[in-house]
Image (cartoon, rainbow, N blue to C red; front, side, top):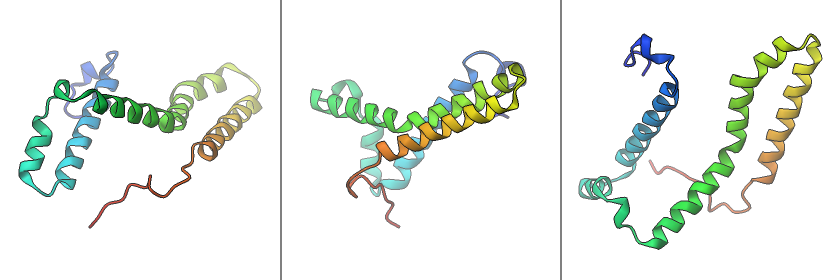
Amino acid sequence: AAGLVPESVQNLPGVRVGKILVMFALTNLGWLIFREQNIEHLWRDLTLRPGAAPDGHWRVGAYLTAMTGIYALPLVLHALWDVGLRRPLERGVNAPRVGWCAATVVAIVLFTGILVLRSNTTQDFIYFQF
């Protein structure tokens, strides 16, 4: 994707987020193409209008979006730490132990999130049939 976006545009605000959203959409499209066994069903899935969905479907979608957000929180925290906070913290403080202590705290929070957010059933496991 980096080759498709001109260099002069890559540093503009929001371009990185836009590239992530486009990649997310393409990944979901690829997943649909990979999983659907019937071309007619694939076409039906791709031409559905979200506004025509009943209220129950919207509630299920909101629930699944919230659950995905909760489960993705450790990844978001790690990305914030790795991209945004680690280098400024290590540069701004003369004590090298501060960066190590902060990294340890983030690791403990992420590990605790894994333990707390784990599933109690095997029905949540997503598998692929080959």
